[in-house]
Length: 267
Image (cartoon, rainbow, N blue to C red; front, side, top):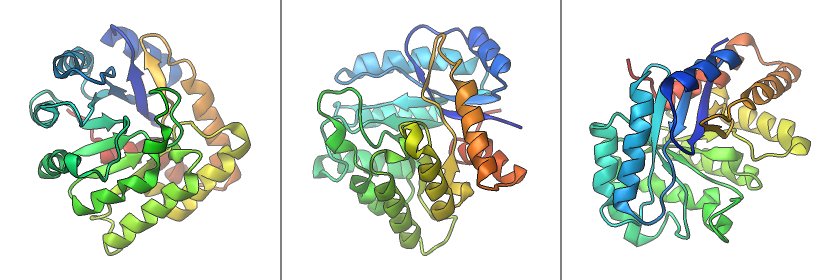
């Protein structure tokens, strides 16, 4: 079965060949690699994007790039455009870092992403870092993106502990699209997050409410050197999907098809 991990962080200098070797050893066909975080500097953000580009340019069919951007950095909208139109990134990664998505000051940034028909992976849910930042990461605040229907976005970690709120946002976006799947903006990234005692229920609820076409697998792994946990994540989620009675086709969609749809591979 084809496996795509939609959520892998770059945390330092990374070699494409070594990344592919780890992926091959774990049976992972493709990853979405998130560039290193930068909270304040436009120049440093661009340097981080160029470093990530070196990795995914070495295997564009197997490593996709997500450009980690802070929308409050002056000039960041232009860098977002450069990332997706010139540098080869398939999407953007955003953590609401002490700002709310609905703030008026961010509207020019969302307008630029709307014009670009950008694909975005948002951190949602509890945030183990960035000071006291979790309150900015509730999925409800992403309702603002109704005004920018060309933006397609995923809510990472099933928004734990706000898993049901994430599903409510999914339902709101589905209704806003007139129940037209081609216009529905939102997806769920099931990267943990969710602790073992609620994992099965959270995953089952997301799959039942949204459909497997809107739910995708991820691990929060890191490069260089920290992909080994993928094996446990894959096996655990496979067991859950088996217990829930999902077919091989459903599992293939969950483990690869949804991520490939939202963040398509480059040839």
